[in-house]
Length: 390
Ligand SMILES: *Cc1c(COP(=O)(O)O)cnc(C)c1O
Image (cartoon, rainbow, N blue to C red; front, side, top):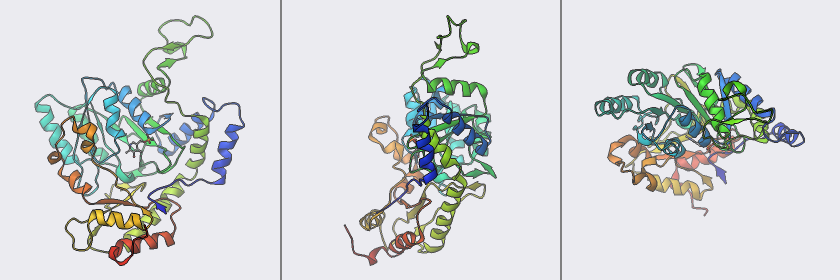
């Protein structure tokens, strides 16, 4: 079986985790801040708050930007449900902006049109969450310019994208956003088992992120509403959660950070090989915007609709039956039954619909070898030439 993605764990990763297990602190010790610092130094942002998942990170990111019941949040429909659930957790209303037909990220043209219409009816979003699908940055400069014109905040859902670059600089520097979120789930670029992180350059947002991570509690006198009753004293000044990352997880993350550059380079070699060998004209390969250097979390091909060789479902089944565990990232979020109740219309998202009819994520992870890739490529290029194994 060849999965579509998997973690890459070294002996030194294992040792780093074991060291924490032998130490005094399993959580709230020194390793979480050390991991945060390593990511900050890599990405060139000012503040980082590590949490137990990117879902939690997106939630506290929305909270820190003040998203509440009367607010509207927009994101891309081609994403994991967490990109929009975070706004629903805050009681806000969610809407989607159709994707760009080339990058599959939120379309800047569609965003611009939708903003114009929303302004007329007084329904502008408070926050827009572009998603860097497959590890390729969205067009952040253009989105940032629109944010200045229409007055919304930006959270980059960079769950796929640590180690990628936009305009020559690492994603996560928050140059064109208020907050950037990373995921450290095992299928992503680096892992902590489960984990996520918020990055920001705004000290006030950073304060709220760290408070919401841990119940809304503060421990520094300067943040309290009154002088402490005694040395035991702390104050809860907001309603937060327990979204803390453990030192065990952070140790794995800190160790994985040392290999981040190498991981992304390995993914680029794998993508180059696919790019050269997937030659059939009915296969659409991923397109990279010249402003981006993708982290290549996913390699998505499209089986062109109406071609005479193979259908989308048929290709999917052929590959699965050959032990190649392809996937589809993603079912448009508005198609989920939970979201359908809110009344979204498929016809409002023609590019997302077309993508959903054609996309397949084929295996992409740093330890995928050439032999495995040849096996995969052979089966994609001539899907009818093989017997089903299962
Ligand atoms: C994986 C993922 C998330 C959620 O990450 P977790 O760490 O599993 O909570 C959010 N958004 C996108 C785009 C993702 O791929």
